[in-house]
Length: 448
Ligand code: NDP
Image 1: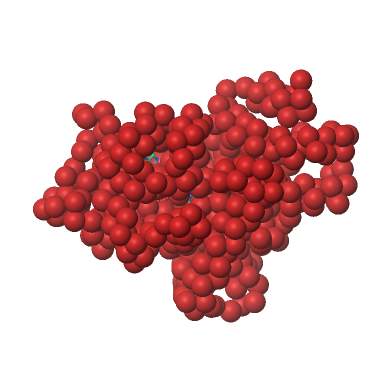
Image 2 (image 1 turned 180 degrees about the horizontal axis):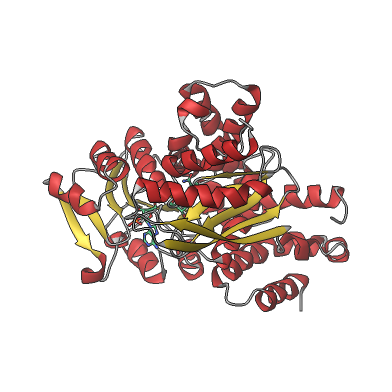
C-alpha cells in the first residue's frame, strides 16, 4: 500500500463517522500523490502526512444560555486548531444545526491549504456550534454568543488564533463575540475578523469572498481565452458569499439568473436585483419568497415540492455559494448537458467528489473552493494587518489588494498543475501549491 493510502486508511479508522472530513482528506491526498511519491522517504520518516491530517488541538465545549422563556438551552461547540506551521490559526465560526466535529475538521483541514494559497502568514483552524441563529431574538443570539466566547476566549488571541464569520455568523454575531472577548480580557486587539467598521473592521471584508470568487473566475476564463462579460451565471445560496458574488458578477458584465436558500430557489430572467436581495436577506433576514413577491420577473421554485435545484437552468458559469455537497453528480450532468463552461466554488466543498470528476472529465473549467473562495480569509488577514498598524485602508486599497491576491492564487495553481503534468487540473494545482509551502514550513520547524 502506498504512503498516501496508508495515511488515508488511518484517517478513516481513527476518525469514525466523519464522512466530510474523510472526503476532504481524500481529495487532497489523492492529488498530492505525485509530490509525495517524489519525497516519500523523508515525508514518511517525519510522519509529515500523519501530522498534517491530525489537528494540533481540538476543543469541545458546552455552551449554556437562557432563552426568552427563561429556559436554559445547551449547545455543543468546537474549535479545531489544525495547523500553525505558517501562521496563527485562522478560520471562521459556523453556527448551524448541522455542525459537528467532522464538519469542523473538514473545514479546518481545507483552511490549511486555502490560507497557504493566499500567500499570507495564516495557519488553518475552524470552529462552530450546532446553535441555529435563525428564528432567535437578538437577545437570545447575544446570550449564546457571550456564553460561547466566555469559553473560547481562553484559547484565542490576536497572535494565536483569530476566528471570523461563516454560515450563521455575520456582523451581528461577530459584534457580540468581540464585545465579550474585550470585556473578559480587557484587550482591544484584532482577535476576530469581519468586525464592524466602527470597531476595527476592514472595508471590503464583507464583499471579499464573493468579489474574490469573481476575480478568480474571470482570470481562469481569461487564461482560457474566454470573457466573463455577457455570460449567464447560476449562483446558489443567498448569504454573504452569494450576495457579493452576484453583485461583482453583474459589475463585470455577466447576468446572474439564480440564487437560492435552503428551502427554495429563484429564477429571474431579467437578472437578480442585488439591492432587493440584500434588503430581503441582509436587512429583513426573510425567505426568498419575499424576493419573488416583490419582483414580477422572478419565479420561485420550492426545492421539496419540485425535487430539484437551480442547477437545472441553462447557464455558462455555475457558482455554488451555499454549503457542502450541494452540487451532486446529477446536477453536474444537467450543467454539462446545458453547455456549462466553468464551475467555481464560492462555498467550501459544495461539489461532491463524483460531480467534480464528471465536470473535469467533460472539459468544464473547475476552480475548487480552497482557491476560489480564499478572498474572504485573505481580506481577514488584511484586517489583521490594519488592526496591528492601528490604521484603516480605503475600500479601493483593500479591493485592489484582494484582486491581486486572487489573480496570483489562480496563476500559482495553474503553474503548479502544469509543473506536475496536470495542466488544467486546478484541483490538483491548488492542493499542490497549498501543500508545498506548509510542508516546507513543517519540515523546517522540526518534529512538533
Ligand atoms: P451565510 O450564512 O451568509 O449564507 C449561507 C447560505 O447558504 C444561505 O442562503 C443558506 O440558506 C444556505 N444554506 C446554508 N446551509 C444550507 C443547507 N444545509 N442546504 C442548503 N442551503 C444552505 O453563509 P456564507 O455566505 O458566509 O457561507 C456560504 C459558504 O461559503 C459556506 O460553505 C462557507 O463555509 C463558505 N465561505 C464563506 C466565507 C465568508 O467569508 N463568509 C469565506 C469562505 C468560504 P438559509 O438562509 O435557508 O439557511
